[in-house]
Length: 420
Ligand code: ASP
Ligand code: MG
Picture 1 (cartoon, protein in one colour):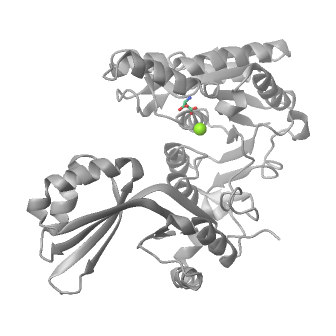
Picture 2 (cartoon, protein in one colour; picture 1 turned 120 degrees about the vertical axis):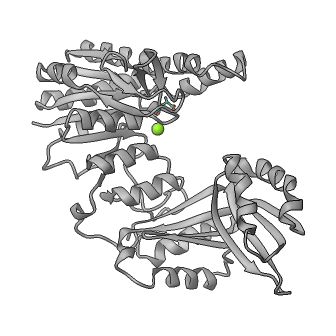
Picture 3 (spheres, rainbow, N blue to C red; picture 1 turned 45 degrees about the vertical axis):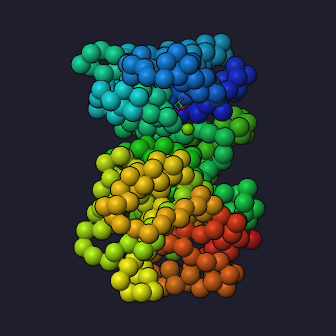
């Protein structure tokens, strides 16, 4: 018998029909003697609609009232799911964040979970009742107000609840059947990974494979909570009940590195299209210049990712290239214009037609030559690299957007990730 948290995302609960399907997934586990706490998202599209209402009411709005509005989507799903469970003979009760309680800090709209008291839920689970908990929300104890965790936050609710309940497994049911070596829509030969380490998943999550909220992976990593990504669209009775013997048969388990026996050097290729490149031409090559460029951007909260600096041909100046999020480009350019005199650059070029392609794998820590191999393969295809960044388990290159698919496909084969 296992205690599992089962989280269902927006597409899995998009209609009452789908919520009934979710209820059958839960019933399968209860019938097998497992204890289940379910965490639900708002029905697909609902949170967007609620956010739109708030903006329509006033662009400048009170963050506590924003939370009061947007947290309501999850409340609807939790109630409907409890009703669907009861209708098929499963004891169930819905729980909102304040009822559990899930305590957060007071950063409304992007709150962090501080503590979850799992005592009452645990009693109910022991009695065979399913606890259906609203994702995405908690209560800020200071003012006793609802607080939401930021978009995609119900993944984090699920992992945090699993930790508080000391669950055996946190299952994230979604519309894909696991984590893939890359996006299967781009590379048909992409394979589902049966296991991936927390570190790798973190890189993938923050690089645009938006299956799990980054914060949820960080939390899972710190507390070593085994988290599985699987599809709710698989027929409920086509799946075996969850036991330690069968839980690696479907989906992808995000777990510690040492649980992964056949570790590849590279586990996946990620890419991010929402990048933009800025180049400052002919800046004086002297101390303090980088600070003059990046100081104002940092103050304005514009995140800079990749940075390259080259000496220009006259040897007295340097060109500086860096990337920002595509949506931040206009703001970044505006800020740079304001400090042109101080920095003393000659001109600025920018382009949003770039992508960042990254090769990720914990195996890189112990294998040399992974980067060299990557650069050689891209060169052989005539793909020019505009910028490079690396971490211990990741190499990212910035390239022209036109080459993104070719680059991803090339690297996917290069590191032996193609399925036969
Ligand atoms: N409903 C919230 C959102 O769309 C939270 C979630 O689904 O994870 O952001
Ligand atoms: Mg999500």
